Image 1 (cartoon, one colour):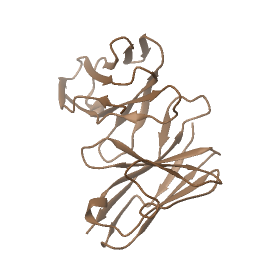
Image 2 (image 1 turned 90 degrees about the vertical axis):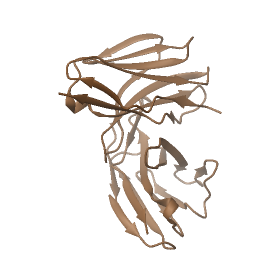
Image 3 (image 1 turned 30 degrees about the vertical axis):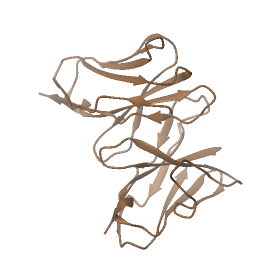
Image 4 (image 1 turned 180 degrees about the horizontal axis):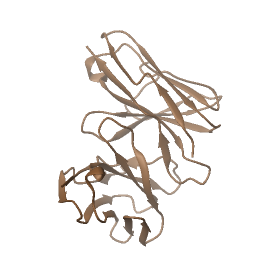
Length: 111
Length: 115
């Protein structure tokens, strides 16, 4: 059974700090990895995707993938109160087109 | 990327009744996905809807309870039938963001409360 695990949090960080969100997955055949942001009462919004081992940067966001250790992480630099949301990790295994979602990590950025 | 219009945004329904949720996409898409998100939980895939064929349901979900229509490449409906309070949840439709496979776009969601 494919599993995607995330710490539910909440993760609380001060404004301006780096927030680090982690996700592990069980299926070694996983090939595509996504991070979604979901504000309370809103639908998920794609913020990052990564396919290859290593880091991928987009503005204040950096996704990190380590396939050997089966984890993917999201770093948010210079965290802002507007980053406060639930962050969902999603994984697609090889041969599938449907993502499996983790339960999400609640992030709180306090001024 | 694709834009989805989903309605209703919320509804309060009596147990035993049915509710139909609609999703309209601004471009043609092969597959549409229907998810359920219960409070504090992750997204659970209900079914995949392909145009011109029966929807494919995930384990734990059946057509009699969640009938789906997909009359064309831009539209789909999900019906929640014979509702009970356990069906109270957020229901979301989703499509691939674009043909590159870079993620999925979600509709705005339908918050259903069954009383």
